Image (cartoon, rainbow, N blue to C red; front, top):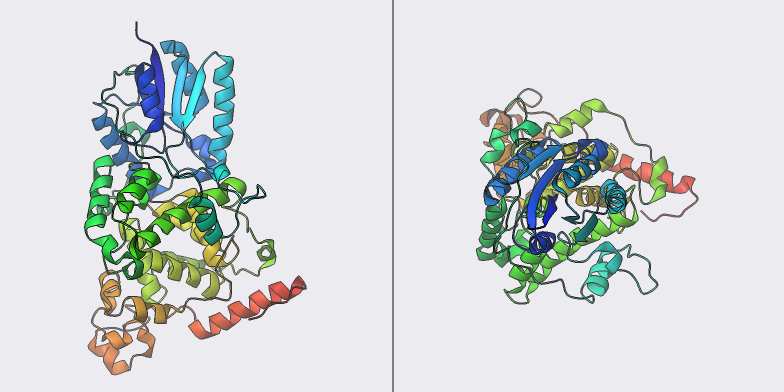
Length: 478
């Protein structure tokens, strides 16, 4: 009788380049499972947009497994222990995850199963370099991105080459206890998720189609083009990477096959930023909640719920910010350049704590990733590792003029001002009344007046930062 083993899918919802799955297949008949664990995740359980993506990703994975994926909801320790006992299983396989709560749970699971006589084999299926493999010469982690990537990553052992999908899997299916994917309740009761389907295909095949499209067209002007939100020069691979429908190794080597040039180098450095974010989270488990630079612990954040809601709903009266926030709500995604502008506006013009932005993005992004989301928000706020200085404040008007010069992006997501001449599109409050009237715009009625004065709020932010630094008796040059 053939040995039975468990393969536990987590953030690796694919068959190709799945090292732990290949190991499982080599050792026997495979019971492939997925467990939705909201209890241990607690405040870090997936947000609404991510749950929609997960529903469709599991559906695609189950189809690729010949409908043999067993689905559960609850505590993985309890479920794995029960399955091992029920099916007389002595080996469990999974790919490692790096969120602090998962690391803690995995340690307990491994120790408990070992006491039951069950061995656990875990592999790296999610990162090019695991956090503990990239350190400075003194054994401490890097705190600045450029040396992390240039000195650490690029001088480390090369990422492993992508692995093939298993040639054949002999399955075991838990037909008695497995739930249906629908039973997980991942989809919203009110079908707001229909709009996401207009913009995304989900699953392993879709991930590779997305990569192929980027390699054929997007990467040819990636270095400069990635800054223009109306252009198709970004990869949009982030949700596929987060859910593991494609591996970073597959992406890395597919891009590297194009040869060495500025576009390839810049894109690979973005993969490096993803690695840096995971390193930060690994060595700073409180990254999602605590400022890495503790001087920001006494920063005088403002608690203004009305302005926060205006920002969340894309009704700030600042067109490029509103366009970004509406893109997020409409598609579950926001262009990276606009993420920086919208984040800077929240933190530095509204003086609202970055954690409110982190939470909103967590719920609304299909690519919500604890490491990337937390590290990027701390970067924008100026309180993280290798962060943009707090006094570097994006001007949303000039950012719009520079990176959406024809107003294509703004007009798509903020259609109520689409008839404005481009000259006034980025700052409607500066348009003469006759121009506003001709465009059918009444500020404060069918499009908001700005919720803050950009110049004044910038001065207030700099003042708050200077007061924070001075209270610590630390000199600052503004």
